[in-house]
Length: 458
Ligand SMILES: [Zn+2]
Image 1 (cartoon, rainbow, N blue to C red):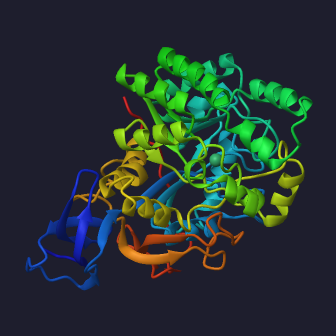
Image 2: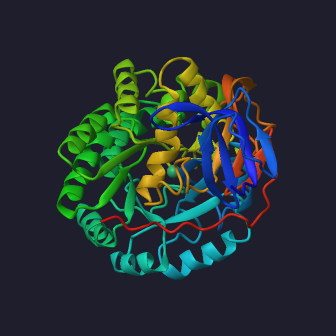
């Protein structure tokens, strides 16, 4: 057998279990999985002794901020942070300037991104004009994204789709394409009413009041109830994002049991950032706290992560400048908030593994496999099998990490996890046979990432 690279001496982790073995790579593909002592010569060898080898991580929830907000992040810096964090493919969101609402803007964005990306990448687009949906599909988009939430940027009112009729129009057309539609659920008018009542009752106009309202269970669950019904009648493949409300999780579990084509994702800010983080770090840790304070909800989140109700841990990597967050602090209902995630998310999740909150097989399912399945590219990606792309991340489970702003690759150079002691980290990221990050240094060349179209699913 003709082999270019042998990843030797590691434990290969899949979504179902692990085995000791070497990964053999030819060009961009895995051509063999063999025992450590199997005699196959390779042109070069990468030492993974004592380490785990995962399929490359895949994230369908990046905010690259390009075009329009390049002072926060851009295609290159976003993919550098992703590569350093163990990701080999990411897809970004349409809430940029101009927002990705028509094919011409999607194609322009893709053309610019082509010169920058280190990881493989895709674009989710907004179906605010339902007539654009078939044209988007023909143009090769990765999938669609609906925002029900509407406030100030990044929850751009121009993209907000709160009316069930609007969502029905989009869902029914997307269903015909066979692509998926991610949704940020929110009963915005309910949020507005509860905000008015809460402020009228004397609550301070503060980040804490905003965060508490923003994470109220009913604001999410009442939206998810309608979305599940619209999914049922249209048959669209729907992915619910930010799924932290206990009632939503119970409804999604029941919908799955009925055979509905619904998947769910949660991003770590909803179950890792605390009230203390919000108090100490302000907007860096928003919304922060009210979810983690609620023990019954946290139980439901962990149950859902482990029983398959939640399919994906996505990042919602959402960089802002620290100056932007000052605007948020003064006016939380309209100012920008969100936090960068790529730099430390894998360490954060591996720390949960050490705490026995989930196992390594679940990490592969939640951070790689399910996203590949959602966009129809599994097992070419999301798995390490003969014939898969040679996308992998070598993980040192025992490495101690203290999160710092300085070590981040994101252009805004901060992390909401600053000061946290974490355990486990990525030490090498390979994308299609090429090392793109090693020992915390990004070595991937801009423009070597490849665009991923969503593959329609019957
Ligand atoms: Zn987001």
